[in-house]
Amino acid sequence: LMDNRRRLKDIFICVLVGVTLVFIYFVYDNESDHLYGPAYKKSNVKVSSPPEPKWEDPGPYHVAYPQNYRFVMDNSPTCKTTTPFLILMVPVAPSNLEGRDAIRRTWGGKKMVLGQLVETVFIVGLPGGVDANQEQARVKQESEQYRDLIQSNFQDSYRNLTIKTMVMLEWLAQHCANASFVIKIDSDMLLHVDNLVALLLDPKTPKENYMTGLVWWHSPVLRNPFNKFYMPTQVITEPEYPPYPLGMAYVMSLDLPKKILSVSPQIKPIYIEDAYLGMCLKRLGVSPTDPPDQRMFQVIPRHPLSSCDLSKVIAMTTTSMSQMHIYWQRIAQGVHC
Ligand SMILES: *[C@@H]1O[C@H](CO)[C@@H](O)[C@H](O)[C@H]1NC(C)=O
Ligand SMILES: *[C@@H]1O[C@H](CO)[C@@H](O)[C@H](O)[C@H]1NC(C)=O
Image (cartoon, rainbow, N blue to C red):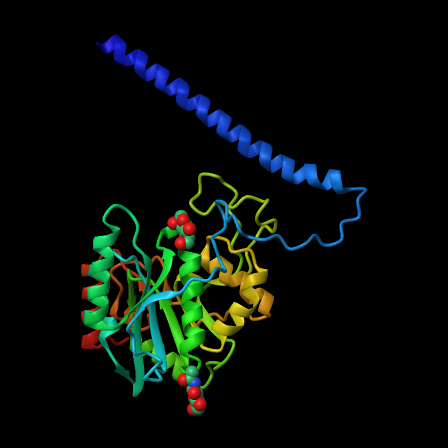
């Protein structure tokens, strides 16, 4: 038995090594072909800017955008019967009712902040999988109960986040041109709403062409095929993305959705949503802005935060919903430096 097992193990390792080598060979072959092949082939051909390709087959690094997605659910009164100062826009998986409830009970539940109207909207796509119909029924019921959900008819998945962001911008451009600011914030974040409103009310904060968050100024395009955010040179030739605020939480003035949508058809819709927004901003000639204090947006905070640090935070990642609750209670009791 032991012998058999050992033999099986050996065979398994051989196969694994073989598959890996073939994989590396193909990746390497593609990259070198791209680096040397086309340039060589084109060297005596005058290439006058090739026609803009159509993005009908999105392939592995693009998403299907723009398309005529439409909202199949939209019971939210936000921007229709109200003019909020700030919209908290939370992209969330259709199944994540628990996350939405936690947000409703904490930072998403406050309507008046420093005298300004703040409203929360959750955005979802269509559920997939075997119990998609049941899930859709649950989402519909939730939407009727809370009237804070909007749903577009694209397939909701992690790979489709860029679509989610873009249909979110479509919704904002269509309904919320008279509102002032939006923060797009993930459901696993803590948001210190008062601090955010205070920043946005600050006379030094621009009212137009304004985008802030944890800005990545020199984000490398990752070429390791095993990385989650792998991007081949065929898709993005530049070694760096243009600057963009990290997708976990970014703020924008509400003139921007329309402007970003106006340039987006010229930009390859890569699946990395925040880098994609950076590419759109660059085309617009708009630069993101660092927040006035680096402690305001935190992606890997050192938990637990001191009261002094917590008093400066606008948005930060949390590791669990209970942790988010605990921080929220500390904030609600008032934290000072
Ligand atoms: C992304 O959404 C489009 C449109 O609904 C869909 O055709 C595609 O299968 C989705 N992709 C993934 C990976 O979910
Ligand atoms: C914005 O406000 C102006 C005047 O205050 C109004 O005429 C217009 O209809 C509003 N637009 C939207 C989209 O609410």
